Length: 193
Image (cartoon, rainbow, N blue to C red; front, side):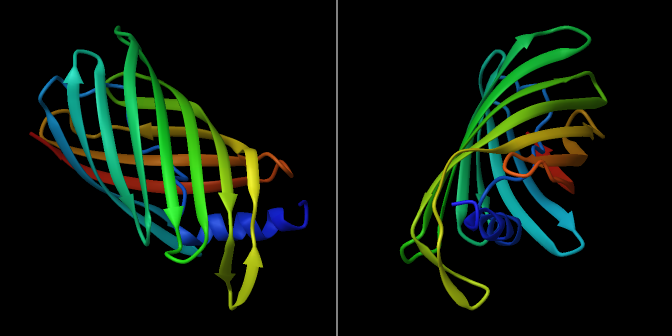
């Protein structure tokens, strides 16, 4: 199993099969508001684009759905626990990826976000269950993972509060199996109506 973890880490970092970055501030949308977003992790070795939609459900609760290229999706629910100058929000996300053949991965990401009108940050856990064989860099590899993958820490800014929003963000992924820290800058642009 330990010999597969470096291969699994490379797959995760290159394929866009998990949601590696947060790109979500702690302020939920108002009921009935809709947000359309395009986002990407921007790394010297890869780019992981995403497209998503969020909807305000009730006061202090919104939900989102995003497509992670090339073949994954994620859905989440965000609930504001404390509404003050510094909001505190809990978010739970589920993601799914398949290579279209026989590899599947499920991800679960509980998060806590805190912040005000401009700056936000937080922490999230990353848990995975994966099964199957996948073509990894030209060779068939059997990859299995169960449980804790790592911890994500993030710090971002929200530029724009009304219709147009820009979220530049720095994410630190601390891998659970070896403690290596990977820095992942990301950027999201959204329109709220």
